[in-house]
Image (cartoon, rainbow, N blue to C red; front, side, top):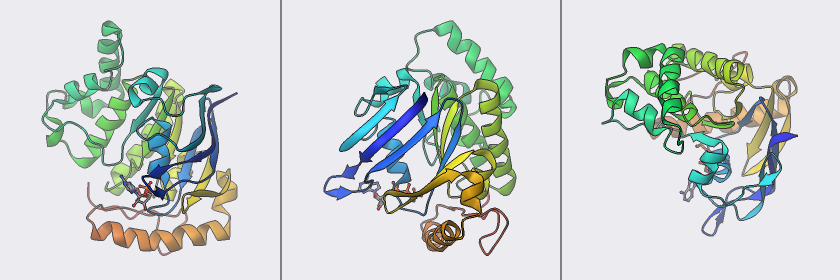
Length: 270
Ligand code: ATP
C-alpha cells in the first residue's frame, strides 16, 4: 500500500484556484520529487498535504485513511511533517532549543532527549554549534537544522520544500547526501520539491512535473530526464523563474542534470 495518496486534489487561496485535479502517490520509503517552474503550485500542494491549507476538493490519504483538512498539529502527530522553504528556524533560540521544538507534538521526553543526541551525531555541525543561536548559523547550517528539526517529529512522511534554495554548490551537495542518508538510516518517505532538478534527480526515484497547478507528466526519473518536452518546459519556465527569483533576492537556483544553459546548479552563496 502507498503511504501517501493524493487523489484529485484542488487547492485555492480565496477565489484563486492553484492546484487542479492533482493526484500522486508515494510508497513507504520512497523519495519522490515534484518538479516545476516558479509559481506552478508545488508549495501550495505541500501545504495542503501537511494541513496548513485545507484542500477545496479531493482526498489525501495516509496509509489509506483520509486525512485531508486535518490541522497541521494533528498531521504532525500522524507523521506528516514539512520542512518549509526558507528554513524558518528560530533565530533567537539555540540549535538545541530549535531541535527540541521540532518534537513539540511528542510526549516521550526521554525519547526526545535521545533524538536530540541522535540528530547531533547525524548532523555533526549541530553538535559543534549546539549552544549557538540559530540566527548565527550560515544558510547551509540553518538548512541542516531545519531538516533535523523536522526529523525530531519522527515523521513517516517528510515534505522538503526547496532545501537547496540559496545554498552554495558545496552545501547543495551536502543536502543531497543528507537526503539519501535519511532514507537509508530512518527509512523515511520523502516528498521533495526542488527547482534544482540536478539535486532532485540525483536522490529521487520518481518525479511528477507540475505546471500551472496541474501534474503534466510523471514517471521514473530516467524517463523524465530523457524527455525533451519536459526539459524544454522546465528549463524554459525555469529561466524566467530564476530571473524573477534572483530579482526578488531569493537566490533561486535552477539546474538540469547534464548542464545546458542553466548548468547543474546556479545557487547563490550560502
Ligand atoms: P515557487 O517555486 O516559486 O515556490 P511553487 O510552484 O511552489 O513556486 P506556489 O508557491 O505554490 O508555487 O504558488 C502557486 C501560486 O499561488 C502562485 O501564483 C502564487 O503567487 C500563489 N500564492 C502562493 N501563496 C499564496 C497566498 N498565500 N495567497 C495567495 N496566492 C498565493
